[in-house]
Every structure is written in structure tokens, then in C-alpha cells.
Image 1 (spheres, helix red, strand yellow):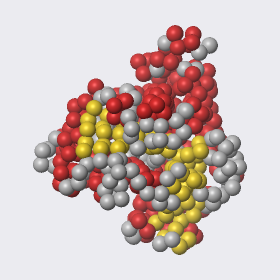
Image 2 (spheres, one colour; image 1 turned 60 degrees about the horizontal axis):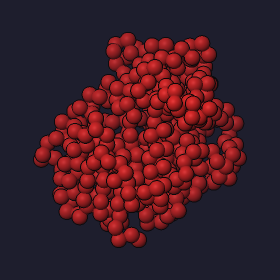
Image 3 (cartoon, rainbow, N blue to C red; image 1 turned 135 degrees about the horizontal axis):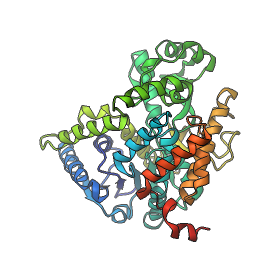
Image 4 (tube, rainbow, N blue to C red; image 1 turned 90 degrees about the vertical axis):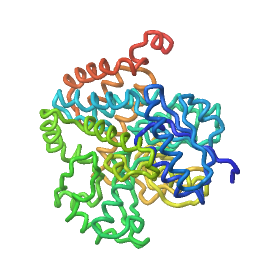
Length: 447
């Protein structure tokens, strides 16, 4: 093992960072981090310093020799790092508000990682993540990139297709949230539950359910069908699944599936909130403001319970768990976005999938508990994979036509005329973050 361990977190001024710090502190015995570098842009500098000070108080309380650095110099932070985590939001929460509100103004679901919002967030984000990966290839070629910047599936697909840096993993809190929901139904600690998942990011399905390492799929699934409302995310309307549908599906859908299988109900709920001037982004802006007021308290030296109000709660702890498993070559099972290889016959080897994987020092090894997706979910998964691929290609190329195809082929849009109008408005609203679409020099160089 290394005698010196350095982690760099890009987007360190995020309100989630205290959870990441708590995860590192709790695992210090097995993951002895010497230096944690928190990086952000100039616009996020105030929040970055607030997080840095809180982090130092947390480390002092834990009495561990971890040094915390804050900087806007990304290259300095990642140089010689062992792990780099990315939790960025290009355009910040103002861009998220547009991702949600503009589609709703056209009568489509407004969500930051699905449909139109997910596409445009990917267009803004992918060039930046690829730039970070290029810097890592130069400055810390042996480091693992752990990305939990959404849309994770599209970002992982872009890394798989375009990055020279091959040590990357996508991570999501949705599988953890589902396992915690099942544990809540069973009234047991979540550590006793493990589920075999497969699919795509925000489109995973639970296949096998284990309690205390015993396969309890049939009996637990019956309990889930009766109590499905308890398995949800804080950022998604808590609508109950239809019991007959779940029994026919015979799988555990993830909460994001409600945008597809309950599209009319979810859209109606969003439109009602939108008419009253409410979007999820505005709720998050308010929650973040409250959190940072709490973080400023010089007496605070622990992660506040209020952080769990955020929809991404448990992301950061999952990241710490993943890093520790790689560092210690644990070989345990975790759910990550990674390269398919020969795992799922439906996809070519180079495609990115999200699946339960064995985590080793050499990265994730997909756990092959199925050969192909059941016919009941195959079509939707392939449709969203097409959306991810077109979105990734469009982001890298600044390609309008591929963006339009991605927008229109997505089942949450599925309208050619309104799709192109919606795309045009969203591209224009994000002009400053999309130089590849609007910079004539870029297009001349890439023709």
C-alpha cells in the first residue's frame, strides 16, 4: 500500500462534501488519506472555503492527521493523486432550473438527468469531464476517476468512447437508496440487504434480493409490492407503483422509472408545481442556502442531519466505500457504471452499463448473474442507451443533428416538431456553457 494517499475532489464546494468527509473519517483505519484537495471554480470559492473550514473542524474532532486543501487550481490538486472524484455542476443550480422549467413550458417532464434536461446537462458536462480525464492522464495516470456527476450514464459512455484515461468508474446513490428502502420495509438495518442490479444509470432493475447473504427474492419482493411507496428518492414524487404491474414485471424498478412507466402522472404533478412557481431546482437552492448557513457555524464539527434532505444523500459515502474497496482490493460487490465487456449479450463490449460488480485493485469486474436483459425491459434500455450514445457524441462534436435525434428519440419527448423547438431554446439558454455548439472556430477545426 502507498505510504502517502492523496484524493482530489473536483466540485469540492458542493453541499454533499461533508458527507464525503465523514465517510473518509469513518474509514481512516483502512483508508489513511494524508491529503484531501477540494477544488472548485472562482464562482464557488466562498462555498469552497466554508466547506474547507468545516472539514478541518471535522478532522480535528476525529483527531486524524488528514490535511485539507482548498484551491481553484485543478491541475495542482490532481497532480500525483491516487483518486479523483468529480461532483461538478456546469452552470450551477441556475442551469438546473432551466433544465427543469423549459421542458415543462412545452408540456414535457422537466428533470435534470432524464429527458431533455438530462440531454442538455450532458452537453454542458461531458467536455469538462473529458478535460479532467485528459489532465489525469498526464498528471496522475495511475489514479482512478470516480465520477458521480450526472448524467452518470451518458458521462460514463463518453469516457468509454473518448477518454485516453481508462481508469474511470461511474457511481450513483440510487442502488443504495433502493436497498435502504427494502431494509425499511423489512424493518432491519440496511447493511443486511444486498440486491443484484443491472441496467443503465437511473434505469437499473433489481433482480435478486439477499438478506444476510441468503437469497430471499420471492418473499421480499412480495413485501416490496405491498409497500413500494417506501422505496423512493427524496427528489422524486413518492407515487406508489401499481401492484399488478410490479407482479407482471417481476423486477424492482428504480424510482427514476416512474418518469417512464408513470409518465402521465409524473408530468401532471410537475406541471401543477410549475404553475405554482415550484421546481425541484428552486427547492434545492433553498435547501443549499440553509445548509451553508449551518456549515458556517464555527461550532459545527460533524455532518449535519439536514444534509439528508438532498436527493443525492448517500452518494458520497458510496464513493468512500468504493475507493476503500479499490485501495484495499476487497473484492466485495457494489453497483457501478462500467464497461460491459462480455457481461450482457445485448450490448457490444465497449458500451457502458450499470451493474453489480466485484471491486478489486484493478477496478470493477461486472458480476455476471444474467446473460441478457429480459424482453420486458430490453426495448426501453436499448432506447435509452441510444439516447446516451447520441448525447455523448453530440457533446464531443458540438453536433446539432445528433442532439436533435437524442432529444426526439427519448421517450419523454417523442415529438419531432416540439423536440426541435425545445432543443433550440435550451441550447440558446445554455449558450455560454456550450462553446462547441456556438464557437465557429471549433466547427471549422472539426469538419
